[in-house]
Length: 278
Image 1: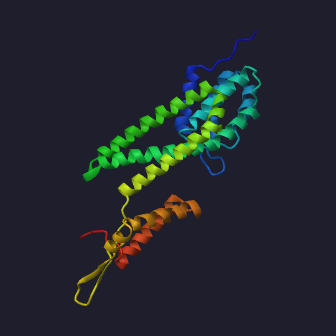
Image 2 (image 1 turned 90 degrees about the vertical axis):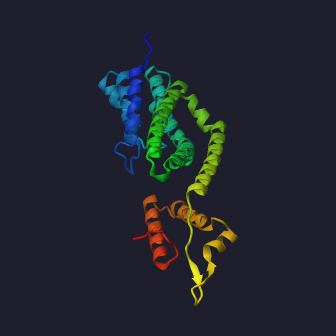
Image 3 (image 1 turned 30 degrees about the horizontal axis):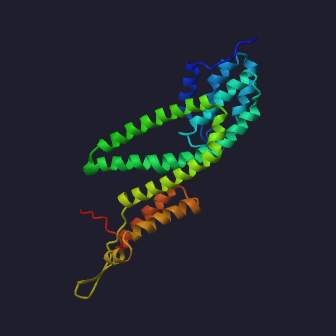
């Protein structure tokens, strides 16, 4: 009887590090994370299949399109490693099964990751860092770099090896009823966090004041707006950004350029006052 093949800890570590450092290798709109995924599986394929021809045949399972949240996506790589190990041991797993698993997990993991990481974790860390950076202190920036780096590395590592341990059970957890509940809960928390950060750190006000012939101010627009709806301009700018990116699919860079243009025109006509003195 042939000995059961087992991926060594050294190879698993190498596979994880290739994903961590190269998830976006050769990134393009056509391939997205395909090559990063492929590179992370190369050490595993080489160890499980010593024969070069067999390596070439089995690596084709990882050339299909792949794109998900890079941080939480490590659980898919770990799960794939487990399935590849099962395939090498003749347990009824083939390339099509692996591709089906990958296709089934890409969407749910992207949904969870984008809400949890981009919509919750990063705003929380940035909020803490901004508070620590008052008066120009560099402590906040240092804190964010260190905290994010540690969370990103050890968080992805934990998910990779958890996926490897769970194998195909990870699919049921992430795609089933439990996964849907997790995604819904995280999206709600993410929305609350973004709203809290918005209310704390974003402030759009107008300096427009109407004066009579004697120069006396008879209407301060900002005070009038605050009486009607405090923070109204901040809400309007926020919804403008959301509308541009979510509905019109304008990139973040172009959205920032548009905001700069609006601010520039606002200063020219006297609607905004940057408070600069020369």
